[in-house]
Amino acid sequence: MFQLGKTIISEDILEKEFVCNLSACKGACCVDGDAGAPLNEAETKILEEIYPKVKPFLRKEGIEAIEAQGTWVKGTDGDLETPLIDNKDCAYVIFDGKTALCGIEQAYNQGLVDWKKPVSCHLYPIRVKDFTEFAAVNYDKWDICDDACSLGAALEVPVYKFVKEALIRRFGEDWYLELEKVAEELKNS
Image 1 (cartoon, rainbow, N blue to C red):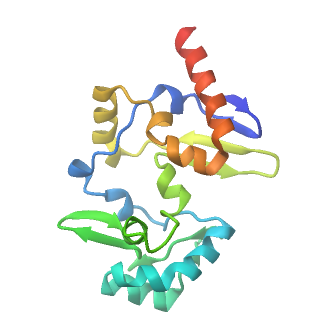
Image 2 (cartoon, helix red, strand yellow):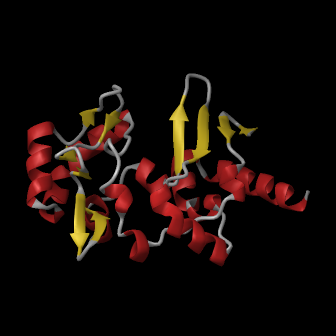
């Protein structure tokens, strides 16, 4: 672990390798698990605002779940998250054949909204836990991502480089440049 500004970072994000392999996992992270995607307070408001533009991209089951539960929910632990369909799929998930994709991201790709998706999804496999004085930045190893780890290793792409855009989105470009310096120092030591 090391500190960078107001973040405590696991060295795993510098040392482990990862590149999403949708052809192998079929987007399992959007349909497996026991909770929706983690959200922050600002994101709940964004979801409320963009829902009318995202709705046409969603499946009937997703629309029903959102209209019954809301565009976001409080999970069993009290954290804010996306609603689920029958306690399984994220309500915003859509399918291209057998591959799960994000309906929000599809609306973003079409230029209808200017918000790509929840930052927790964009950051995955990094999970950020906010505390009063700092944020913990950790690598989340999940067996459904074994193919992503293999692909990352084959391409020699460390986690922090794979999620560069998301890390900049969450912490800013200056923070990311400092992270790159730490990674370079670690690599050369």
